[in-house]
Length: 489
Image 1 (spheres, rainbow, N blue to C red):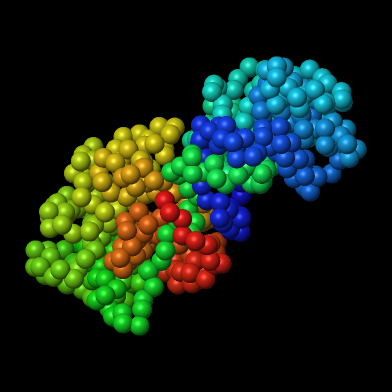
Image 2: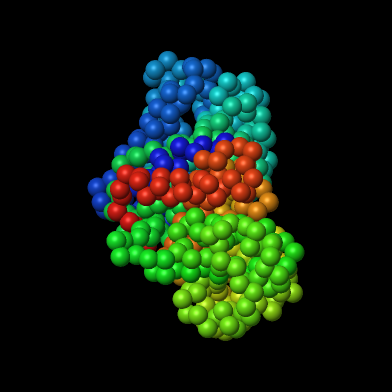
């Protein structure tokens, strides 16, 4: 899916991301809440047909139907399209299980059927992929992969077949869909790459599944939306010290990184920000006039208990980071650790225990915690549990995990945010939010969302400095969104 700054807002009130296993439990619980399976399947098929009618002109259409409920949705969609005059044919991979809802949907098909072959898919102007859906248990290969590969235009039911709904990874082969229609709640794979791109335009349809099933499923993964967290708001009695004091440890050479982090902490609302220069503070004093600069020893600065949050890593150098982080942690300070911290403690994740927030990119994460593999959500959860920190794995699909397993997946970041220095801005922004009293996971999730929105508002061609001017607008936007009750996670 191409970056769409407005699409994320369509998930408001529906941030829960259900794994295929959780979605299966929700489906199983639905009849006890007055939503029988045949009704849900009819509504799902109708949602697919409606989405197609709104986006495509009538053309020769082939429904590739699997033997499960995903195939049942395809039978319903094909029947409804045929009823309004579309030329539709059905190609079944195999018969549905006798007595199932999918078998009932298949029995109502009165149109032509054809073989499940690449040639049939190639002849169609549009292919509806209703083969497997998100609950895929094996790799897609053989005749299924060849047939999907031959399709020119694909609409996927739930997810493109071959896409793992839990991880966003491809199992064997998955066709790139122009449109994906899913139901009730998104899966993590709809937001995680490469799944997000393979889904094309994604429509989340309400099919009458009661929201009460969520209390039984108890999801722990969410799309990162403002309803998950609450931004700190200064009151009438607030003053600079009550809004927190962020101290950024500044290196001797790559001084721009610390300056970006410090400026972002101020934009994020911290009452005071100091750069603790490990060398000469001259270059730092030439920066923003509102940033304090100190060349005092670290031990002396730590005596001031009002310095409640520290940023360690941006531009610091591995050697200095290795010497600095243990001092901050042993002093019991709240630390946002970034950049050179992960080079300093390569292969030593336990050395990071005690930090509040860790913000590695993919390479730094691999050096510290090992390769995340296909299931990056599980890997980030494990890292958070091991270190006791909120761990934010940076990327176009940033993952933020808490030690208790709670996860947010961010989708607010535009591709042009990938520029040098943007990670330093993110670390400083998170520190500014923590300094004002936000819990670490909340601050990390909010920081990722605001960072992405600031990038979108700054526009293409941005450099890291441009983000600073857009943070305020992103904060105002997030604060002024239509009110939704804060989620109890």
